[in-house]
Image (cartoon, rainbow, N blue to C red):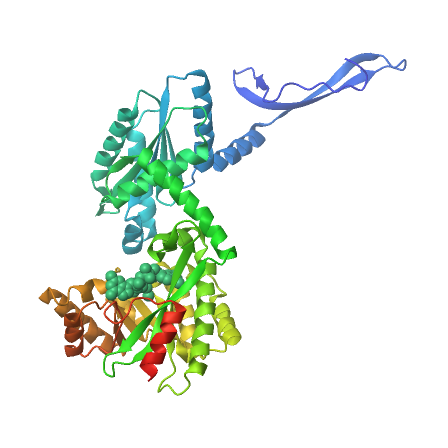
Length: 494
Ligand code: C2E
Ligand code: CA
Ligand code: CA
């Protein structure tokens, strides 16, 4: 040992005590030097590190495991997946599979039976999953009701499919929780890993895409990620990127669909509907890009832009056609995504101030999902909007979960009956009864009704018999460009 040198034992050194117990120790050492500055010995100090070691192990365990189920968490799963990809470098003929599991209707369990039962269910599911897989497979809880499984050393995709079938079967048996029988099913997406060029994010994303396909095809089943899904995923990614640029490139336009009073046959206002003029693909329907915009959060910007544009235009029309009986109204769609933000009311107020439109000329269209997803914040926000004098419409009524019990708790003024029912008015007597019932409900709640998607004179006649007040649909006009809408106002105005 040199002078001044501190000798250290390797980390995690164990001390074997007389009774054979292993004690983790820490140590430090310092040389003993005589007056000629020669090293003549050393002082070694050891101490018991059992407690520190425990804390350290616990912390690292917590960082890599899910507290509720004790399963590996996303971090650990990603780590194992990375290692599995690494191993493919050395063993090119092996394969692994990632299974992405999402419980069907877990929210329903939580909402109806309470969170404690929801938690118990997740724990019980974790145990069942462990029971039906090999010890070498990694089962992780990624969050909420999402689980992921890594199956290593499999021959081909059929091994993964068999595992998925086993899981679906196992979970088919009801759970006994707190003296209640709880039923649940699961949808599974499978992706196969066979190249060391695979990327962790891609594998997880593709398994997720396959899982969504399983849900779309009826739930309680599995789907394997394939070339078609790959092409679709690529197109979707492209669309997502294009959508991000669309806002900066001013590729959006607002179209206006007339809303007609059935008692006077006059135009009372418009619904603003966004259009995307894609530089290569032409006009893209909102049905295609709104869901993507919602997923990426871009919907917040898009909706505010539409609001600004539509309010400004309506205010111009109101000035231009000032001798209208009633000022033209404008209905603007608001995605449920806005209702998790606290500055929504302020933003809307700002648009009204900037465009000079009167609050009473603006109607906001909201679907039932808003109330179902964010009941608390929706209550506050809707009350604030109402207090400003803005009209509130419940959109696509009849298609959602329609728990009628909530309706009276929210200050809606307008009910828009979904075109699904209006379309069948002239074909099925059942639809007529449904529309009649919805109209009675609206009347009891002091709401006015707008029928959506009126396409034929027969449908219009039925609606008039039912004394429906307002309607919109291709029978009157499709959504129109700004110029075409203006011509229509002029004609209506004469
Ligand atoms: P929505 O709010 O229910 O809008 C009505 C949809 O029905 C529009 O489709 C309209 O063109 C279509 N429609 C109108 N009359 C008829 C008819 O007689 N027959 C049929 N078959 N269809 C009719 P569009 O413009 O493609 O919009 C689809 C959906 O996209 C809208 O449904 C709305 O949920 C959403 N959306 C549109 N613009 C916006 C927007 O600015 N913001 C948000 N958040 N969503 C929007
Ligand atoms: Ca609407
Ligand atoms: Ca609608």
